[in-house]
Length: 239
Image 1: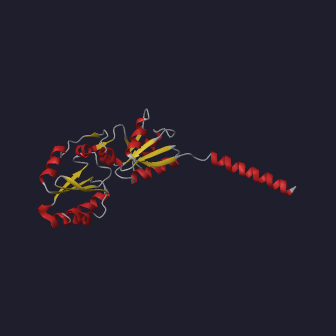
Image 2 (image 1 turned 120 degrees about the vertical axis):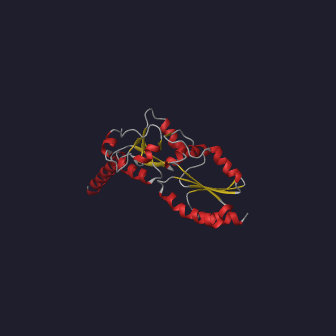
Image 3 (image 1 turned 90 degrees about the horizontal axis):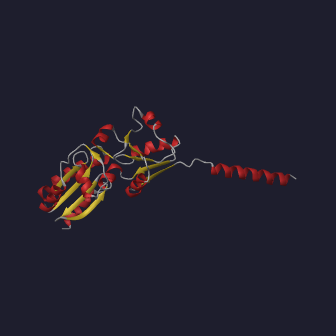
């Protein structure tokens, strides 16, 4: 009799645990590449796109149709309340930090699907997708190509003044400029000054992106900083 009661109790517990598993929160957050992010946005009649950067950054350039707020925004609660938690939300920033923080909070609030753009605004604009900007590019694509053609060695640094990693590149570039002088032409391109040339290149996936050319041909392209100085030293020593 006791054995039967034990078996029945076990069955009930197992059933309850199974039901509990099926009723768990299905909310999810994913970091996705540009093509998947873009396709998911296009599949929505009225996509909920959030630019999690600061207001100054948003004013200069952003994905068309995006709203601008993050966890530090004064109207954060109001902005979240205006969203539909049962529909997908698409978030981007410069990298993944602010996007990730916002994504975590939205999941806690019951949003079912949250997608973060891998590479942020750099990936979107660098991938040639349409965007809003109130700037005329300081550097054009023909001017860029001329610089590459007119110099034996060209190191191109593509980034943003709001990108923390990009700031660590500056002293390395100064070191290389002092070391190589006129032998190495260094070109610095910032999103806040020349967004269109970044779009036209269709090669940028993340900030910073560093490209070394020799006689018009790419020696290396780095998505991120890495050991930049060593890579330049090795490349120039080998030529």
